[in-house]
Amino acid sequence: LEDADHVNDNPRIRDGFSSGSIMGPKAPGNSDRTLMDSGFINPLDTTMKNPKNVFVDKIGQQYQALVSPFLLGNYSRHEGHGMDAVMMASAPDSALAVCVHNLYHLQGFRRFIFVVNDAKAHCHIIFDLVPQHGGPQDKKHICLQHNSFYSDAELKRLWNDADNGEFHNIHSGPPEKVLRGGKYYANPRMGWYLQQFSKMLISRLVPDLSEQYLAIDSDIIPVRPLDYIQRGYDGKLTIMMPQVQKKPDQWRDFSRLVFPELERQKSKLRKPNKNYVVGWMIFDRTVLRDMVGTIGEALLREKQLSDPFPFNVLQVGNELIKENNYFSEF
Image (tube, rainbow, N blue to C red; front, side):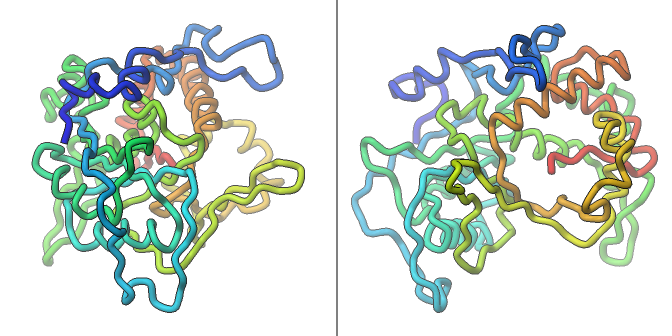
């Protein structure tokens, strides 16, 4: 394992952390203007020079990839591709082991980035669960924790005075309680929000992240081969989107605020009752940068919130949660 304090010994990682553009993508409809022109600085391209608790896999490629015929079932092994998998993992458990095994063998993922609650306790165990480790020229698996994305001052802002602080409603949870063991309990949401932001901010700490990447929760088990992206004869990409038959009412207030033009054309929407909040999704870095820029511009315009992402989202989320409404990365 390689701690973040020594990660600069690796030339590939050193170059990534020491350089990085903070310019956002070009704004739609105006090729000469960027999203930064409005005063909003897009943080997704801003690499961090001294992140805490980021570990890089150093295990060599000295053995055959671990494989379970039982988990493969009747399917043959999938050929590898260049897309990374970014996994939210609460602990190195059996669900994570099966998820990683099947993403590797059934769906072709060869590089994994794990985001956990406690990197020092769990990362060395998680690396042992990966079916195969890269050679000298291959990109290494990485493991870090949700707090790694934030400075000490930002962490204090996120966690200080949970009862009466800036985001106390998120810390307290929505009015709707959860039933566990026959009793109703509060459902604090700050950790849930930070997990969402980790999927979106991952390029901050992994500058060589693939242009498209899979963001997935570690308790989701893929059971068959699947090509998430297909390229047409014209070069255009078709990206598979997960969905469920459930009205997205919990997310619509935020959507109306940021994308009002969609609401004005509601009758023209092809699938207004489809919900994309499932637990996995392919993210495209260019699309993601553009979306975060749009969110920042909308919240500055509609709410006069000048904080960068994700603090602007948390400020809105702290109000919406009182009505059981939320922001979702999906």
